[in-house]
Length: 394
Image 1 (cartoon, rainbow, N blue to C red):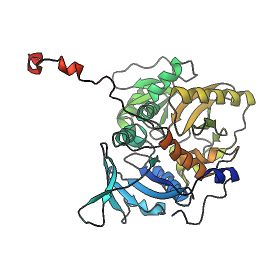
Image 2 (cartoon, rainbow, N blue to C red):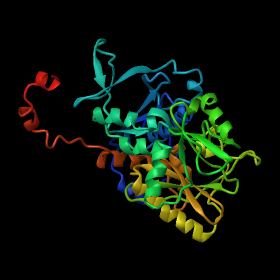
Image 3 (tube, rainbow, N blue to C red):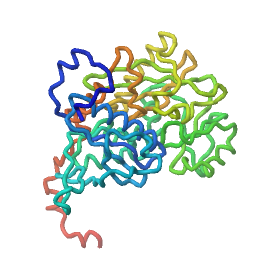
Image 4 (spheres, rainbow, N blue to C red):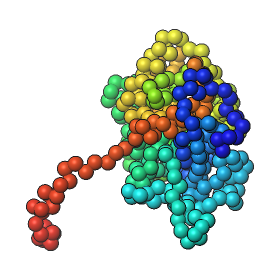
């Protein structure tokens, strides 16, 4: 695969000189039982194709997580059309096993009854939303002793929880709009409508509604399937627009250019899922102003806040931090811990080649593990003094 014709352009001389011969073995994980399943496929296929053409990569294993949470190894050179009807017809079943000798295993071609581990140095996570981005997949990989890119399980869970994210940021003095939990029996917020209703655990504008009054907010709880796991409500302000910046944490913390995403429909109240992703290449094809034409003082404050947010929320890998602004004031909206297309399109000054971004993510996964478990203190002393269990139930 490393000998394939490059599709990712020329790298800088410094990058080429710094890279050894082919050595990295990468598992690209994409898909998953999430509303963002299709977008995850696009990101995963882009990454797998680029890595397969990278001279620093010895092997690429494209590991597809199906809508039913099964795993398949497929060709890293597949097109998106292969997934339109569900899982591709050509692929081999894979299992993710936990434990000290855990990892991805597949049925070996010989002997027929055996299982063989897929040897990878790290997993590149391209799963957006749902269990791929909320800490569930990260926790499984931790238990399987598989190094991976992106946030640790705790940071992933925090970043996916809109209410918790706002609470952490507001407590640190970071400017945010008021955001409260929405559910049966909960009182109306102190702020007046109109309101934005959002899934508490979700992203990419899926399931978000703008409504005028509180009775309509309550009605959305039963009508909107995406709100059933939890919901939040915040004030809607038509004077605010979106600004976004990406944060890359390896080898040092670097910010991208600031982007102002644009709606395809000028009359739209908010950026919706179609604005962001319906264009054939994920976030790459979305309309935008890049770099955003904003006041220099606003950009300076945005960059300062982005670094604060990254530290508070445990950013690792490539994250995208979303802001709202009226041209003068800034409010942090949310963090995307595994952003669409891995925010590759935002790193324009200086330009960052996609292959360099990807190998950086994999190198960070290997060199700076997301999680290491510790059993310090579990020396048996509590058990020795515990006495009879039956007596304690007494």
